[in-house]
Every structure is written in C-alpha cells, then in structure tokens.
Length: 57
Image (cartoon, rainbow, N blue to C red; front, top):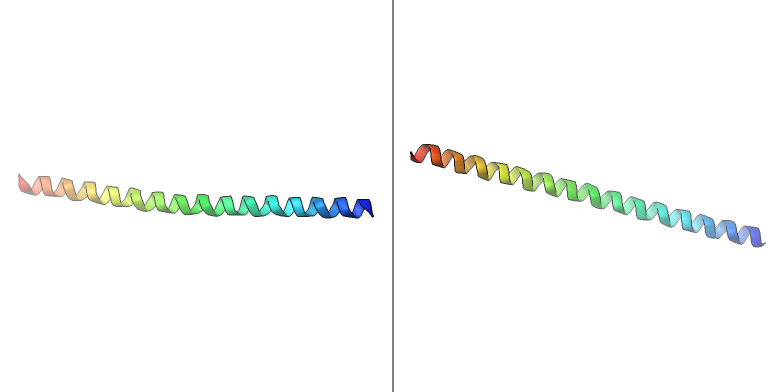
C-alpha cells in the first residue's frame, strides 16, 4: 500500500514538472515572437528615417 502511495506521489510530481516545463516553453516562444516583432518595427522605423533623410537632402 505504501509503495503505491509513493508511486502515485512520484507520478504527480513528475506530471507537475512536465506542466511547468511546458508553460515555460510557451512563455519563451511568446517572448521570442514579441522580440521579433519589435525588432522588425525598429528596423522599419530606421529604414523610414533613412529614406526621409536621403530625400530631404
């Protein structure tokens, strides 16, 4: 009986670790997407500023 309880607790702990790791990966993936979007926006702003400077002169 005790062995079965220990196995059950081990399964629950392992399942929790899996869920935590999965949530971390989702968060990392989301942050990478946000970072890419911001980098793209910054690049577009820089290109627009460069075009404006060239055409002003």
